[in-house]
Length: 420
Length: 183
Image 1 (cartoon, helix red, strand yellow):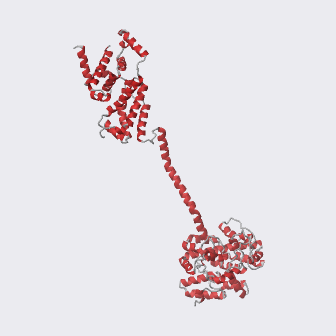
Image 2 (cartoon, each protein chain N blue to C red):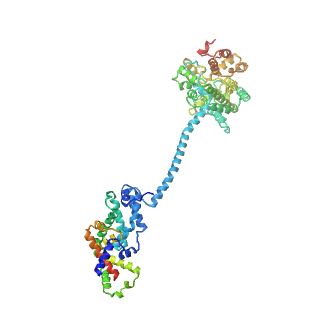
C-alpha cells in the first residue's frame, strides 16, 4: 500500500469516526474546563436575564434571607403595638366607666323632671372660696386613696350661721354613727354593674359632686333641658333595680365623703365662719363647681345626712329615681336662695322648727317605723313610687302617710298628692 | 426517574424562564465549548473572554432559538463567529519572534530537535503545537470534528462552508497533523 493510499485509508477512518490514531491522541489531551469564576459569571448572567431585579450574588441572597427572617418578628411587634394602642384607648373609657360607677349619687339628680316642684333652692353657681375646694373632693379622694392625707382647709360657709358647738356635736354624732366603709359599697356597686344604659342616661357627666350639693341644683336641670317628663319616665323605666341599688350605694359613699369633709371643717374650727360664708357665697373664680357645691350644709341637713347614712348603706334600698320634680315656676325662688341647703335639709329645717329644733326632728325620724324616714324626702318619695310599681299599694300608702307626718309642708308631686 | 431532556428542550425551557434548565444545559456544554475555544485561540485569557461572550450571546438570543437547529450546532456557531472576529482583530497572528522560532526549528536537524525524544506526553504536546500551527479554518474544522464529533454537514453549517470545502479542510488538517506526529 502506497503512502498515498495509506493516508486515504486513515483519513476515511477519521471521517467515519472509526479508531483513528490522531483522534485517540487528541482525546488524551488534558480536559481543560472553565474555572468556577467563569461558571458563576455565566450562570448569574443567565439568571439576571430572566429576573432583572435579581442580583444573583451570595450577599444578596443572604440579605434576602435575613429580611425574610425579620418579617414575622416585625409582624408580631406590630401586633403588640396595636394591642397596646387599643388598650390605651380603651383604658381611659373603662376607668371613666368605673369612676362613674363609683361616683356619688349626685348623677341621679339629673333625671329630675323639669316641671317638678322645687324642693330646694339650687346651690350657688359661683365657685366657693378656695378653702372649700378641698372639702368634699378631698374626702372622696381620701376614700379612694386611703394613704392620702386629708386637707384641713377651712370649710365653706353654710347658708345660716351655726354655732361651733353644733358643728362639734355633729362631728361627734357622725363619728358614732359612721356607717361601714364605703369602698365595699362602691365595689359592690361597680361589680353589679347594673344597667349601663340607665346609668349612662342618668349620668350625663362624670363629675364627682357630693350628693347634698346636687339636690335641686339648677345645673342638673340644665344638663337635660330638652328632656321632658315623658322621656324621663322612659329613662327611669329602662333602669333596672340593680342599677338603682348601685346608685343608692354611690349616694351613700358620697354622703360619707361629705361627712369626712365636715370632719375636716370641724377639726379646723371653721364651720361657723364657713356657714356664714355659705349664706353669701364668695366669688372665687378659680374654684371649681364641685368645690362650691361642697359647702358645709346646715346643721339640720347634717343631721339628716347622718341619719340617712345607715339607710344609705343598705344596698337593697329602693331606687333613687323619680324624685320630686322641681317645677319651673318654683325655680326662680330656688335660685333666689342660692346658698340654701338641699331640699331635705330645708324640709327638715322647717319640720324641726315645728318640732322644737333639729334634734326633735331627728328623734322623730329615728322613731319612725318606716326605714325610709332616714332618707331624703325625694328619695323617700321615689321609694314610694317603687312600691306602687311593685303593687305594694298598702306599703306605699303607709309610707306616704308617714312622709306627710314628718314633712307636712313638703310639696308632694302630682302623682302622689292624690294617692289614697 | 424521567427521561433526561435533550439540549433543545432545555434551551426552550430556559427561554420560557426555567433557570434550572439553563444550569443543566450549561453543565453539559461547558467543557466542550471551552476546549473548542481554547484550542482555537491558544490563549487562555482570550478563550475566557470568548467563552463568556459566547454564552452571553446565547442568553441574549434565547427567545429566538428554534428547536429545528441542534443546540450544540447553534452554540458552536456563535463561538465560531466570535473566534473568527477575534482572529480578524488579532492579525497578524504570528509576530517576528514566533516566526523566527518556527524557521529555526524547521532548519534544525530532526535528531537535534527536542521533540525527537518525546514520550506520549510529548506526543500530545506535539499535537497541540501542530494544531496551533494549522490555519484557523482547518483547525476549526478538525476541532469540530474531533472535539464535538460533528459530521461534515454540521461543520459546514457552523462554519458556513460547503460539504466539499469542509472535507478539503479536514483533509489538509489531517495531513499536516499526521506529518507533524510522524516526524
